[in-house]
Length: 412
Image (cartoon, rainbow, N blue to C red; front, top):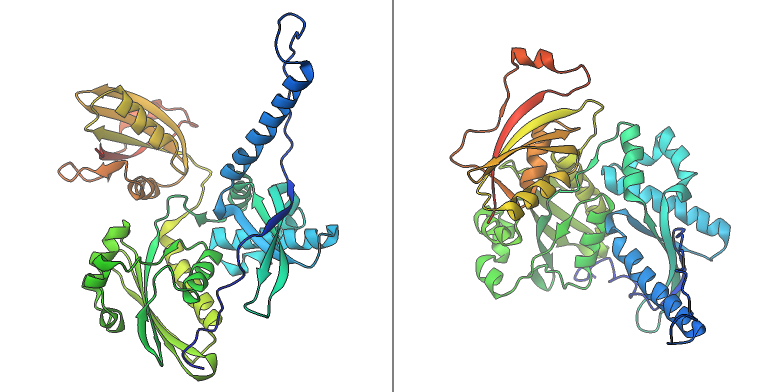
């Protein structure tokens, strides 16, 4: 029994959508004088307008849903009481994922918010799936909820709670599974362990990626590299996924569906290690360890709004035309924590902006550099806190002063 994973591949995907609710939409039909010109009948035009409305509404709603703010809960029925129970549970899932803190649901303000979970709901639907395998199949129903992301982050900010940055990087997981049948590196197609890893990471907001293990990676990474934590080839292979964060895991299957594992998290040149104290079921092992890894990364890649506003001066070089200037401006305006972007100058392929933000200058740098639009100038002066000058007395009390001077170049 030691050579099979504890978790099955999970329920198969959706068979049918049972119900759907959309946010209220106010629609004003155009007034048309049908007698003024020849053409289709009034009824046919109305039918065409109605059909276009139905076709246009659904894709936009589904496209606007953010998987980070989506949760699903198995339900016993579609009764209102059961739906309300599942809605509260789904809301709790999203809060835990955003904060990487399973204990968040026990705080008084959270319990109060869960009773009003429908206030944060954007849309929901029921989905029927077939669970089990072979001759032991049964149909299960899930409530899938899409929540309003900005409303939930405002709730967290009002209560002084940090949450995952929207620009957090992914982590690549190099997982070696050792069973009686031998050792195997787990790729994203493994029927049992791959979905179990992704689901366990998603619970606490960790964006986990599994390797492709194609011919290129098979030449670089061998099982013994993971077994003995030989990080050089793993770091080289991880660069392909545009992330500097990688997890090295060696899982050993024992008798009676129990497992042990060693884990290494590498980021910012600071490796951290975990080891199971005693054999445990696979689900317990994955949930507990990935929650601990998420908590460590959360310290670096979380965002916490502050009541005071700061301003940083940004110089951006290698801007060749007005389109690139606009591209840089829009990129800054969309960053998390940025409340205002003020253009200062644009001359000689260099632009200057004053960026107003709610986090610290260090947090602003981290969010800027997680994207691939701006690169820190290698030959320019390092980002430094701006000196406080006497002219700052000219600012009003409510006007934030320049807190840092940063220099970047636009990626080509």
